[in-house]
Amino acid sequence: MKCCHSCNSQACCIDHVPIFASLNHEERMEIAEIASSHSYEKGESIYRAGDEGGTLFVLYTGRAKLFRLSASGKEQVLRLVEPGEFIGELSLFSSLPLTDHAQALEATTMCVLQGQRLKELMAKYPSIAFKVMDELSRRLERAENRIEEISLSSVTKRIAGALLELSEDRSAFVLPMTKGDLASQLGMTQETLSRKLTALQEEGLIRLEGHRKIIIKNRPALEVASLEE
Image (cartoon, rainbow, N blue to C red):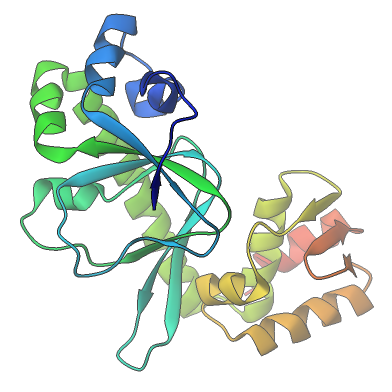
């Protein structure tokens, strides 16, 4: 981990963070005073399960993933983290250590905020606390939906739904993660994912190019597949 000196002010890390959007410039500068920026290389650990918490990490540039490891070492990807999103927030409200792992998927810069002082600013500016609560509620809903999908949905339905979500109405896109990470997030093996992607290609719904590029050839049919039980 290295300190990041690409910004003249830590404010560059938080200017575009949704949870701080309602603050004016002076208020955002108060947030910047309790922040420091750090850069991570691709594959570098941002934090590990068991580390002391009490810190909020806001992703400024790059991408990261959150995951957990089973006792046997099997990785379960929880979610990807994009610029403007934050992680480590649960440890702000608990004395327990961190429970998941965070790893940079590419060269990444994090804005790191001191937890205790951030809680003081939350009391001063309740809008920050409400934004954090709103985001946590959304994450809980997504997590519950993901559990339901893994428990009740077929492999085809999960994959079709993920492709539609990742494509964002584009006809072609590049997977933002490895196929192994996507498979983990969808609750299946990489072999199962690869086999089903090949089947969807043979059916004319998609076309695979290279390791990660996917072209949606028949969106209506893919949408039907995402709804089938």
